[in-house]
Image 1 (cartoon, rainbow, N blue to C red):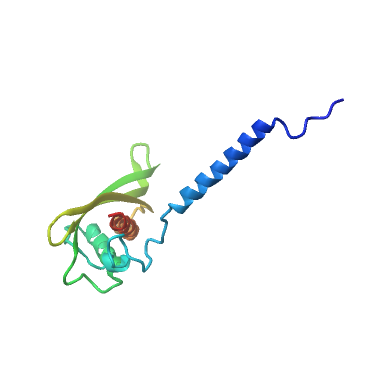
Image 2 (tube, rainbow, N blue to C red):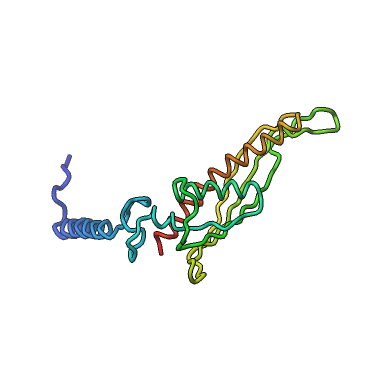
Length: 190
């Protein structure tokens, strides 16, 4: 039996070491160019600005909306932007908010041979926004997010309406969180 050769061809070993060294050098260069930072830190929100992300978000005024579930999203956004302090008196940005709702039956139970009664549904809130500079009206960012919440539909009509409202309230809180994060990312990337 013969033993395997040790060391191999010196030219191949040299190229392998060169390839490993070059790969290591490229990966170090790629990692050093990384600009990852916390989104909600106290550092300036943009590369050209001096205000932190909290200050940028608290300078956004949200325009009035027309539906109850849109008002829930708006109220939650105002609270998230300003920590409960209300809208700014002299905003740097204005936010046009539009919230649509879709209710779908998720499951039905056959009560009789003819009728099916819904027993579970989902409500989807779809929020679209346009962030503009307050002075010029220049559009800074636009976006769209959606969130779904499931709920049980009881036989009593009032209980079914209340379950729908609770699902809308849950969705509005979660949609406001998504919109806040999306708007913060838009501000950070400008």
